[in-house]
Length: 79
Image: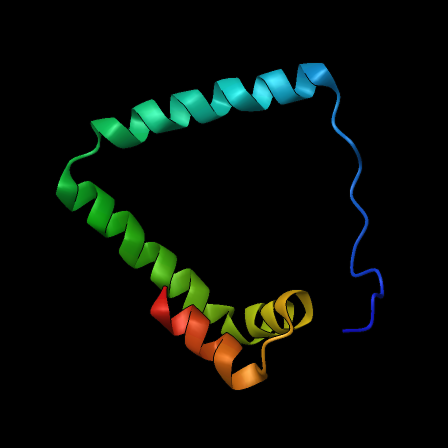
């Protein structure tokens, strides 16, 4: 690997972190309330999104993880 910086991210404030944790807690409750069919429908939509953006996502996976492109594309298909 090259040790080059891929991206920079800003630090979060304690208040912003607390807000994110509250959102995550609510999201988990919403997910738990979904039926099996409802969850399945969301996973199918997610698969469509991943496949639509697979070239860009493969580039990102290759950059971040150092996988060869074929492995990156296969990783997306596994999802």
